Image (cartoon, rainbow, N blue to C red; front, side, top):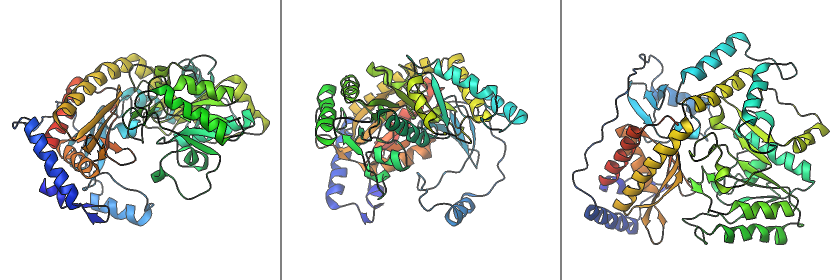
Length: 477
């Protein structure tokens, strides 16, 4: 514990009151836990990477500082140099293996370097790496057809982009064009990208620069853990209706939301929230946009798309990350009627629908189906959540365990009643788990939530190792 108390937080040291709070937590934890928590052992894995002969960590860091944006940051006190990956594991420059519980930020769904995806990329690259959508090519058409088959209703027109930010920007513009309105309603704590429109829709100050971001209204976040109405989705939904009545001309362009907020700390919207919200938006002439950038492509296990859990059908769906298993690829899927708005002028995207990227995307869909990864996300993800919930019952510092499938969050607090964010402790446990060989993410506006979004091929043994590593790290804090 003393090691934590002497580390810097922001620009100053942890206060005396925080030290007393840490001490009280340690005493509570000591009375709740067994004293024989052993160092967990990583499951066996039949792969060893080739020797690494590249630059050292110090050399890479020096180049980053000299030539890359100063806004770049890294997760750990000692930066991790990842040089190889296979399935649910990553390897550093010394050949050490790590269990990947972050999946490149909910991006690697099929597993690192899945042979089917790699083969599709290599074969397409050898034949034709790039031309233009002005020419015909089967890769983009085949993938669009397969992708449309995974969506409900008339959602069958696909626009390919290069990222989630770009997909959300396009969706917002299409909604404004289609409705003739300009007001966007989104959620506090949501994240939709870092360009002009998407930054405006984002509801966290830490991701917003001081540039013009007009026309967006942020509704109360239907957060079952921290929200004012708990899990009552209908009460939160009334705030959207109030925003329409008091903050707009009574007509809006769109409502955009994630069903499980990723960057915001794996917050699943309160049950029953989206149906009344979608109804209010429709009455105001707006479109409903589902941001599936992080939660889509079977990650939640119970459904292929996270919005399905709320029993709604959006007008536009945006996606990226898991769509290509790490290939730069995104998409907007909408109805034929809405899609026509882009014919009013010329819309063109040089790399959107690139044959290599779309070949990878089609391979990803086939792997998800062939290997039954959605079912695995549901079964193993539910088991993982149960084990994490058991940890919550063991340690006072764990305030909440939430999410579904392989999109799970664990929030640390120094006081369960006040829900005081345990930011320093979260950073410490994150670092200790890395030393044990487990990589997970961190998020939430207070940076006190573990983001657990592993590849969908994660096994029960992997889940046990992850939880055991967290158990050990918290017990030794």
